Length: 286
Image (cartoon, rainbow, N blue to C red; front, side, top):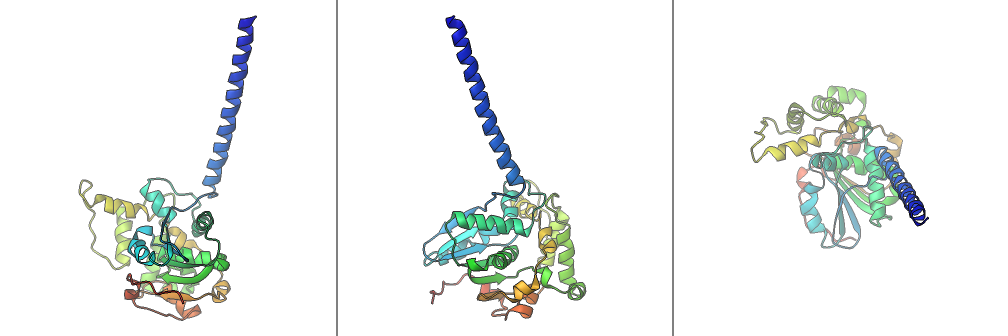
C-alpha cells in the first residue's frame, strides 16, 4: 500500500514537472517566433555621462565604434547613448539577420531600446551613413522624440528623382550594388572591394586568412549583409518636407550620395565640409 502511494506521488510529480517544462518550452517558442518576426528586438547600447540625451548611430560597417571619441567628449556634459546597428551586431556575433530585415526593423528596435533606457522625451539624434538614414526614418516616424537632428551623409535614395539617379553615375552604381546585399546572402570579397571603391577607397586587396588584418576584413564585409534595405526603403516626401525640427545635414567632398538631395530639396545645408564631422569640444546647450 505504501509502495502504491509512493508510486502515485512520483507519477504526479513527473506529470507536474512535465507540464512545467511544456509551459516553459511554449513560452520560449513564442519568444523565438516574436524575435523571428522582429518583435522585442533591441539594439545594443553604450551609455556615458549624464544630462540631456544625445543618441548616436554609426555607419553600416563600423556602427557604434565610430562614435567612441565623440561620446567621450560629449559625455562631459550630456548623456551619450551609442546604439549598435542590428546588421553590425549580428555580423560580429555570426548570427543571421531577419529574412525581412529593413530600415523599419532598426527604427522599431531603436524605439524599444530608448524606452528601456528611459529616453521617452525629445533627444538630440545624430547619425552617419546608414545610421543617418535610420535616425532620419525614426525622426519622421516619431517627431515628438526629436529635439534636434544631425545627419552625416544620409543615403536617402528614396528622395532622389528617378532621372537624377539614372544620370548620376556614382550614385546609381552604389544603388545597384546595395540591391544585391540581401539579408539572407553572405557578401563576397568582390562586393566589399566594390563597396569601398564606390566610397573612394579603391585598390583594396583581400588579406590572407592567417594575417593580422583578416578579422578587420571579415567583420565589416559581413556587415554589408542586409544593406539592400537602404535601396528598398520607401518614404513620403511630404512628411520630409513638413518635418519641423532643427536639422544639420553634413555632406562629404566629393558629394556622391543622396545627402545633397535631402538637404537641397527640403532643408538648407548648414555644412558641406566633411571636416565638420571631426570630434570637437561639445558646445554648451543654449
